[in-house]
Length: 297
Image (cartoon, rainbow, N blue to C red; front, side):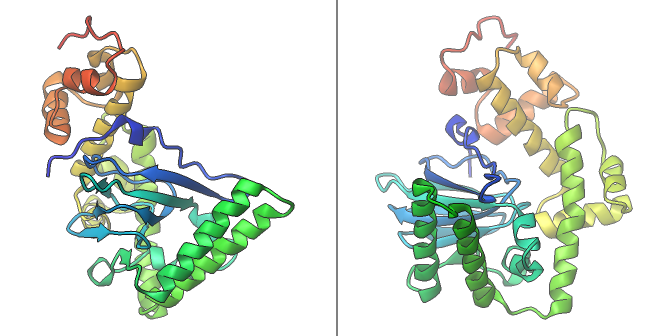
């Protein structure tokens, strides 16, 4: 699958509101899938209209109105609208800490055994209809901002996650705690990559951030993310380059150096492999007003 990160998708703000602990983002899926990405927040997609698809490492889900897609905050994914069937959605983003403060167990639906989990909850299930109504109630509260709206929005979030817990609750406590510990351990490695990707970092550096051996860190990346450390780091750097190509006037040389690539050849090779475009083609397609005549391409 050739996948292109659309500049519009990069601009979405997933930052949660300190008053409510969430972000509720109306978003129409593009007809060309983005490059696979992940967010800092947990994510629930509620389909409002049209038809589209979500893609995970080895899974594809078609979505229609009323369907839900559940995504955790380390899971790389992408999505698209089917041509002629524009897929409009409400995306609910919130931090794990928002749930941890109330009930640690509400995180269970988001940290799962990949082999036994379905990201999609079909619209024909009662729980999908219940959660859909709660998300719409949440949207009304955020729009009205009446007295105590923040508390009501939080209570709606807890209700939603409680329904998800009831829907997904199949593992015993010991199995779930093992899975959650894997995710939290890996998260420290992902945080290290986020803050050091501009440097010439190695798996050894990331494994130290997780207090693991390199071999265990390598295995954990594959087990939790469904992809290796090197693949993850390369895609992270390419996404950073995409943002800079469309949002700054830096030259391509300055950009690949700031994104941690060690040579122009590796940058051009990886960028074109992941986006199906050269950097110059990418600028012309997604930021045509940018001055790119001086870029050494």
